[in-house]
Image 1 (spheres, rainbow, N blue to C red):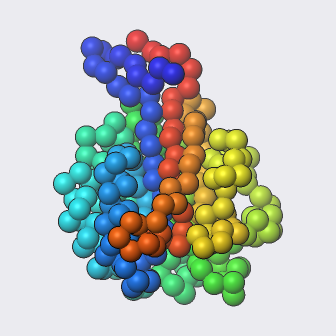
Image 2: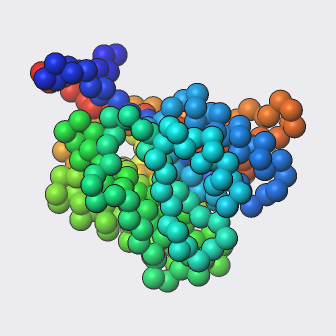
Length: 265
């Protein structure tokens, strides 16, 4: 597959990748070793954009130390919780952050400091808003979680009117029944796992001891339709050699997006 195009004498890629992963910062068991292993996977796969959830100050320091030279990193500094999520963009990537920078919107009904990070970018000539969150967690928070999800879908639909692509995901703590109760996915909002073939081997993300749920998801609204996901795989399935544990209690989502159609000159 030809994934490069030439434009005005320069080579530009038609493809970028995104890693989304709850890195289990709330468990102290081999925390530093697990975080280092996750950073090594990032160095190996070189995703253009990274969404991490369940980051704590100690793991944040490790991530900045290990990846700070390669990535620009963003988090909401005033979050009302002892753990948080972040968004990272690889330096030198074809995904370029817009001058507005990354912003954070608090969910008004949250009891856990939950919020939405939004990063407007360009990829070649395509405008993309990357959006990530860690939605309200507990079974008792079902109604608030549905409100949060619906508000994210509403933002995606508003941006669709401007032909902007949106890519939203994270640890959504989502049950299929909750999605059904808000009317399902809105028109033109798609589930990357479904679009990539609904591979059962890359479906269930939690709990890694005995995966039973797909609570980590990636939704996108394709704007003019040129940008589409081409592959989705679960990462973090190998135990660390030295300590015999998995990197997290979640598997990560590693997704590739590609500009479809003939190359332009």
